[in-house]
Image (cartoon, rainbow, N blue to C red; front, side, top):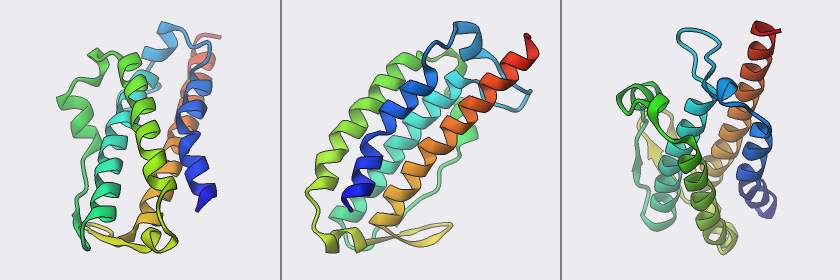
Length: 156
């Protein structure tokens, strides 16, 4: 489990590396009407991390808790992600990850098999949840790279 904790711990570093040198224009660029800007992606990643930590802590602390889906598009529109300070959210993401790494590092092997029940996908182990949110950051880094390419293609 050490490898997954290390991958989880690197999320902030990988995310900030993907943002290196990004201009304000690039951060606000939307590659399509229903697509998110990089700025919105950053706020979403942070909001999703709050949900992830809530789920992880419930599974660690409670017996087979219920876990609920959230609607990222509704969060983005109702909270007006475009108007929010993505730097504040980036720092919050950093703090959230840093706060959770020692918790995950201290777990016993059997703790990783503790389960919760997600209202859409069913039974999930703690390992499943952590792995999903490691991959979540990776998927959004790929989205950031696609936005960079679309921006470059649009303004080339």
